[in-house]
Length: 410
Image (cartoon, rainbow, N blue to C red):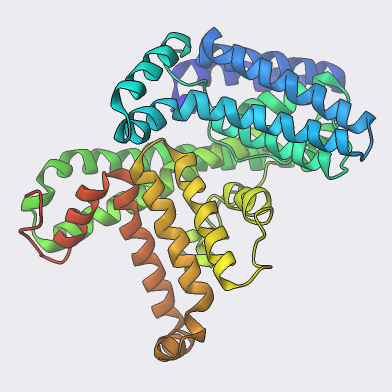
């Protein structure tokens, strides 16, 4: 992970003292912008930087144009066009080969192979670094400008919103209406309290990532080849290691990002709030990767109609939103199925109290909230198998947790 490289640790040891010593907000912003640009270029390379620069420029100019045109139809369509361009870039760089090789090839493989060869010619070796986060932040920006929020007029302020290095790689996903005021406040003052709090959070993040998550990962890598021959308790131990590894890995990385921002007096949105203590699956998604789940809610689920058009439409909207949430994590069927797994659970969670044959279960969970927490935790933990493994293998592993052998594919 980028924050755990020697290059980054050395660079941040140089950058932070300079930031604290400089008192003028304009010079601080210049330093932050230069360091963020160096950070992005170093880890993404020219092939990764150029597409982001182009998308950022398009987003910035369209935002200004929409604001200048006021709230008329042309402004609305201009913003929508910008969102389509950003989404199209995300699809091209991240999902082209999945669409061609895993979807279109099922219908017409020669044609899929032809298009794949054409796409390959214009595709870099890897997708631009963090393009998913860039795309979601740019779409959020244009969506809010279209709704009437004032755009970021200063190009340097938009640039730092786009490439602010602590949130560049793994989020959290920023909202510009919150970020820009916090940025200005952080640039204008220095206080030992937020610096100390930030360094503490930074240290906690490194501990979660390097000590807990990485050691759990070593255990997983060592035990994974022997999952089928383990006894049942060992398999459950493996699942717990997988479950807590992803939490401490992602939460630790987020703490590093939040801590870095705090040392500069800048606040980033929280991303985790004890998610494994959730009382139901809806509560889980209000605690897990919160900046993503709230983005999905505000810019996919609600625009689709949310819960305003009856139960069936609400269920469909939720499934579509979570299917996209799953694909956002990666271009593979297992991510899609993982999203549908959670989307289906949310649909059940919304309506199971209204089904007569499930009312006793609702009453049981009301009387014993710890049981509801345990059920939610086990559901989420089981879902991580689908997140990390192909669907057939995940199903096989899930059955083996209960000692069921002889499934197809053995």
